[in-house]
Image 1 (cartoon, rainbow, N blue to C red):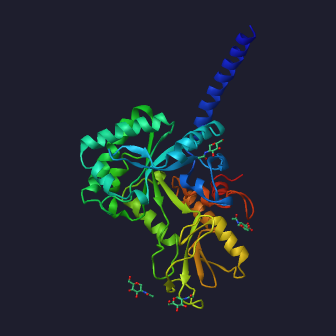
Image 2 (image 1 turned 45 degrees about the vertical axis):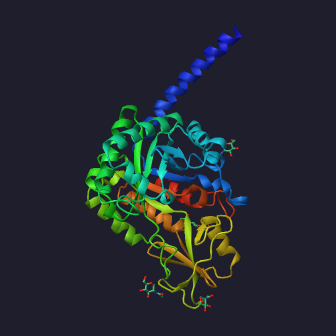
Image 3 (image 1 turned 60 degrees about the horizontal axis):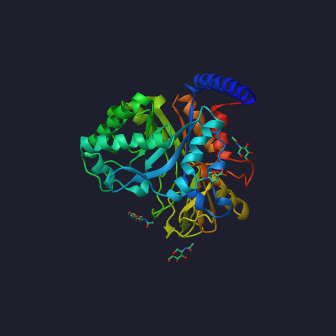
Length: 379
Ligand SMILES: *[C@@H]1O[C@H](CO)[C@@H](O)[C@H](O)[C@H]1NC(C)=O
Ligand SMILES: *[C@@H]1O[C@H](CO)[C@@H](O)[C@H](O)[C@H]1NC(C)=O
Ligand SMILES: *[C@@H]1O[C@H](CO)[C@@H](O)[C@H](O)[C@H]1NC(C)=O
Ligand SMILES: *[C@@H]1O[C@H](CO)[C@@H](O)[C@H](O)[C@H]1NC(C)=O
C-alpha cells in the first residue's frame, strides 16, 4: 500500500517533470547559443589546473561539446582516452548535466588538431565507408547519451588530405545528417575561418551549426609577435562566410579563453610584429609551450610588475621582461558578444571551459564565460 502510494506520487512527479521538460524545451528555442567546449585532457592538469565535469556550471552554456574522440583502425568513432571518457565517467557525467539544465544540449566532438586529416580523408572518400561511419556514429552517440556530433576535421584537403576532400566532406555531412535526422540528433562542424577548405553553400544544407574557430591568427611557431584573435579580421571572415552562403543564425563565433605567449628577442622591442626567440614560455598548470589559460594570464599580470595591457583591434597583449602574451579579456569578449547580437549571429562558441578561471582563483568564477553569458542574457 505504502509502496503503491509512493509509486503514484512518483508517477505524478514524473508526469509533471515531463511537462516541465516540454515547456522548458519550448523556452529553449531561438536563443543565442553559448557553445562551451570541454577538453577532456584537462582532467590531468595539476593542482588548481585540474578540471573535471563537476566544475562545470551547466547554466552558463546552452551547449557543451565534449572533445575529442577519434577514428580507430576501422575508421569508426572510438574513445582516445578510455580513462577520462569511460573509467572516470567523462561521457556519463557530461550527459547527466542535462538533469541540472533541461535546456542544455550535449554533443560529442570528433577530430581536432592532433587527429590530423588523413584518416578522415580516407573515411570520406566513398559512399560505402561514409555510410558505415554514419551508422556507427549514430550508435556511438546514442549509446553514450549525447545529443549529436560535432565534426572537427582539421582540415579537408590539407594536412595529408586530398583535393577531393572538399566535395567528399559535403557528401559525408549529408550521409551523417540523413542517418541522424529520424531521431533528431544534431550535427555541427568546427571550421577554420579560412574558407579554402569548404564548399559553404553545400555544407550549410546539412549542418545545424558551424562553430567558427575565430582564433589562432598567430601560431606559436611564428618568428614575430602577433594577435591571437584580432576582431577586424574575424569580422572580415564572418562577413565572407555569410556572403558565401552561411545563414547568420547558423554561425557560432568562437572566442578563446587561452593565450599564446612568445619570448621576445629584445625586451625593449615589444609591439606587434616584434621579433621573437624560440618559445619556452607557457603556463605552469596547463604545461604546454606557448600556451596559457586565462587564469594563468591573470596570474602573470598579478605576479609581475609589468601590468600593462594593450587593447588593439578588440584583442589584448601584455608583456613582462621578455614574455609577451596575447589573449581576450572580459572586456574584449564582451565587445565580441555584443557584435553577435548586432549582427544577429547564432551565438558564441568558447574554447574552452577548462581554461577560463573556473575556480575563481583571481576573482569571480568563469569571468570570460560569465561576461559572454551576461551580454547575451542581460539580467
Ligand atoms: C565524474 O563525476 C565523478 C563523481 O561525481 C567524479 O569523481 C569524476 O571525476 C567525474 N569525471 C570527470 C571526467 O570529470
Ligand atoms: C634571444 O636570443 C638571442 C640569440 O640567442 C640572444 O642574444 C638574446 O639575448 C635572446 N633574447 C632574450 C630577451 O633573452
Ligand atoms: C620571419 O620569417 C619570415 C619568413 O617566414 C622572414 O621573411 C622574416 O625575415 C623573419 N623575421 C625575423 C624577424 O626573423
Ligand atoms: C572586467 O574586469 C574588471 C576587473 O575585474 C572589472 O572592473 C570590469 O568591470 C569587468 N568588465 C566587464 C565588461 O565585465
